[in-house]
Length: 594
Ligand SMILES: Nc1ncnc2c1ncn2[C@@H]1O[C@H](COP(=O)(O)OP(=O)(O)OP(=O)(O)O)[C@@H](O)[C@H]1O
Image (cartoon, rainbow, N blue to C red):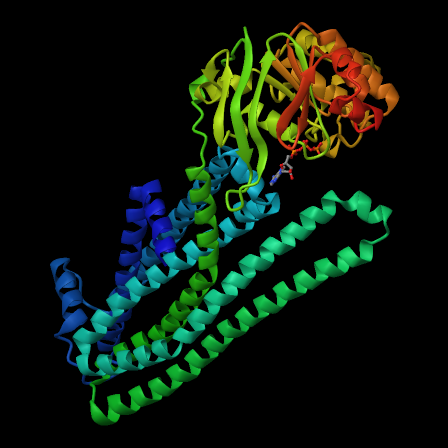
């Protein structure tokens, strides 16, 4: 519940005025409904339906006084007109309140999802890789949706409570003892249903878990659909999917059973209490007809409200795990936030001397410290081309992630021209062009893909970058040229074309440091040759860092670092390293491990 209260506080902070207006409207609506009910008495008095009722007290005398002041005789049309006016104002306010409520919820929806998304995007990379993408997606989309639903229920039951309280006060004024009798019945029923509330919360947790599993399976399967189809295991995947979906169905129908059971039991319970009430009102308390009618009308409305209050409570409890999941993710991300200064978004850093790794150690999992990099010392000279080689798991990608500032050293420092990298993190990242192994393109045109990291680039600059990446001829030959759509993750292009466009996109930023993370490892010889030519053409123009998987990519580089178990064991240029037949590099090269 404390999570729910935190969100209510957020809702209040989002728009205090709208929140207060909303609550005031709820109170006004409750009062109007009470007045509407009380209007029944003057109606009965004036109509003479029940003969012999004293018309000098309560609501009748109030209305009579108003009529006298306005020089109007109290008659049936006048009472009916007043009654209609009350109902009209009430309906108008109800509509207005619904609109205010809807607007408040929608704004809150935008605020919550934007706030959470922002927290995720600004969070430290190590936190992001420790959680699955589908888990994060599930929380931002499904769990937040359940948060809005929970808040909606909260606002609904707040309205119910306020309206009911006002009516209970009216009842107490008319017949205190009988009202206490009805309330006691309500409290007994309420206590009886508390187990259902607990059960609802447990089911809510199951729904959260199943939602997460379903999205995880779906994302994984769609990502691996090519492999799934290639191995003919579609049926296994479909059955898995149906199994989780069935579990969700089972869970939701159990929850719906609780809800309908509550409704049913409330109806039966209320019928019992109404019978007892009627009996005691007539036989024991001997109420006069007008009191009897008003209390009957109010308690007839009270029972359905109690039932909807109970179900609202169950629904809120069902959504509480979603509140917790969303809050936890947000808190985790905020605690691991990078706090990048937004006014430095377009600033870059020039590299004059080079990048120094000084005693850098890094591990991924704090619970079992297993060093991926161990006291790494190396210098990447500015304007040179540097390569990292080593067997799988040696630590090449970790070095690059540290160089970009995505990961932070657990020990030691990374210095850019002598200054700590982390002091100017955003400027440093603005100065980097990065081509990952699995080149990623957005599902839009080549032009938009080029402009997404460099929105102000001119047409000329785009073509220059394409030329540098040896892909200008290819784009020129396409029917729609730069406006060609590339498909989901660039699926309409070959691996080599995709890789060269990603290289062009990185070059469009005119980076100080170009990082190629095994950029040619998945390409055929022809494409590899083209990329290699493009890279060779860039040598000397910027600092280039290559993670190499093929010997051909590193023959011309200025310095090679050989990594093993997170340490640099050898360094030098290709010729020097190959001359030493005892070197690890030589054995890696001869056994085709690079
Ligand atoms: N996200 C992660 N969580 C935990 N351990 C990781 C993670 N990423 C890498 N590691 C571990 O860190 C070590 C270095 O991994 P890294 O990916 O840097 O190696 P690599 O040389 O780039 O390997 P490859 O050539 O296969 O990509 C390995 O032992 C690996 O298991």
